[in-house]
Image (cartoon, rainbow, N blue to C red; front, side, top):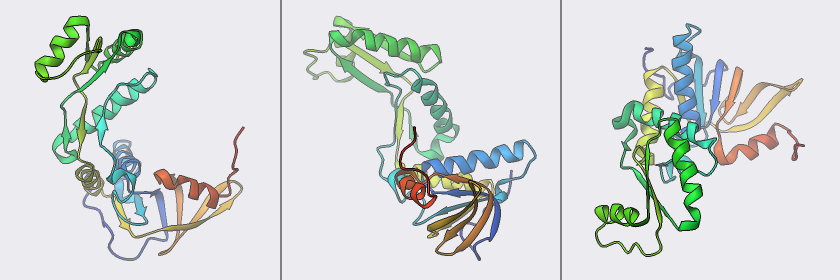
Amino acid sequence: MAGNATNGGGKLPAKVPYLVIGAGVNGLSTAWHLAMELEARKKGSGRDILLIDKKGVGAGASGIACGLLRGFYMNPVMHPLIKHSLDVWTYDRVTFGFQQVGYVSCGEANQLPDYERIHASQNAIGYLSDLHTGPEAHRFLRSIWPDLDTTGIDVVLNEKLSGYSGTRQAMRGFAEKCAEWGVDIREGVEVTGYDVTNGRVTKVHTNKGDIEAECIILGAGPWAAQHWEMLGLPEKLD
């Protein structure tokens, strides 16, 4: 594994192989996984990656999100993604602050077919859950919360593997993983524009200087629209 990251020291590099924009969960996790993949393939290391953020680690939406990991989605396409997310969060439960406490969802009789589909889809990929219906649903709920009024509840899905993480701790944890693998994290570096030649970004302008990169990864979350505009991309895609 690579050594510690520069983590904000010295002059901003003018050219890097990989530039990641945004130090929220998307940017941090991408930088960390990219660093591991580069080293595993012997095609570089985390030292080839520069991660920048206009404020700091977890300063945006990632620092205030609820931090909930659950698989209760009607669209089955989401379930493998959640299972993969679980693998990431449980990679280092302590560093990421992941609390695997489960997740319980309650519904009425007319929702039973939806619950059955979700239950089957989850268990098919190893994201284990139990389905309780009728009186058994009431018994299950009261085994957890004895004074719960279960009137109107006809079906319960209990996800055994779900949980949550304190977001600030999680963001610090992802930053630690990046640092362990050599990623250079720079805070207070705001993107102000892009140079685009033949549809390819050739240079990124920031308040701390310009950066050239062979590969640029945008993980700016809610601010992606601003970057989309700076890149001169169309307002509508057909």
